[in-house]
Image 1: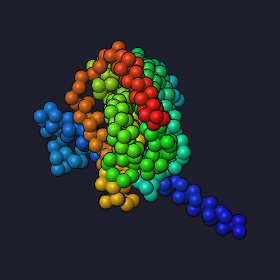
Image 2: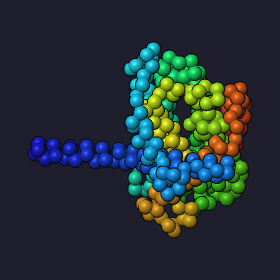
Image 3: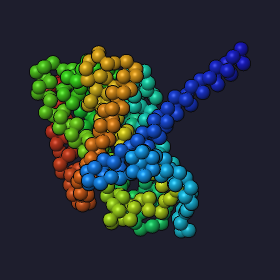
Image 4: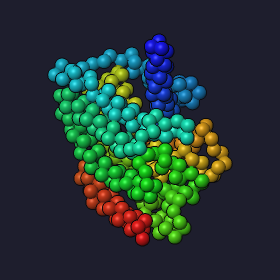
Length: 348
């Protein structure tokens, strides 16, 4: 009996490990595709070719970049705090990776179907700020600490509009569980929260302008959360060399890079789950099922990632004062208005 229990425990542990590793496999494949996509999109925007030599149209270039980073020497500055310097990339990636646990990739797969899924993602992603501050301070480099402080101020500021936008979606759907939020939006594109959800027609028409505005603001705030242009103040190359990761090289630098790209999809996945129907098909019951669900979810997420890349190579960087003004005096007041209006419409 004890032997059977032991075998059952081992099988359960193996299942947990395999299920936990699935998002990591996805992140690695997604990062390769997005790295190539970013270079190609930016090249077309600027009317140039980008990758062309390594493989057909440069499709093998991301693999070459990974091999290059693997072979690079892992240097640690003499005056750095060695323990915190080495720990920081792992903390940043762990914070991002933990967020994927509550993301519903399809009706058949979600890492952890917890009732406070959205709250968990917000809490887990806050570890990224700690890791960036840790890396910037431990580097003992003035550019690194400037970048780390900028990142902390930026992320804390933009978490408020992000949380308020998420609150509006939760008010409409009545749940913090992303699987339940997605199921609420099933039945076609007309039931997505961005278009008013599954509310009666009168309420839907009244609430529609506020849900559209909320989704737009959430997307802007999510770009700031992942430090992408025009909100890339923590890494501003023209001002801070490379920002908080100036002193990093080799695989530790690659972990920061991987975490940034994983974060891009994470914030897109949250926006998709809350406002764009999650894994549900835009055509209702047509083209639905576990594999179709995965396709729709990834396609919607990758579209938002594509828009983030598009914005990066189109808009100039904001100044620090403009960055704070946008958060505190533009996005946050508008979202308070949306929270009040949506609450009033739902009650009355």
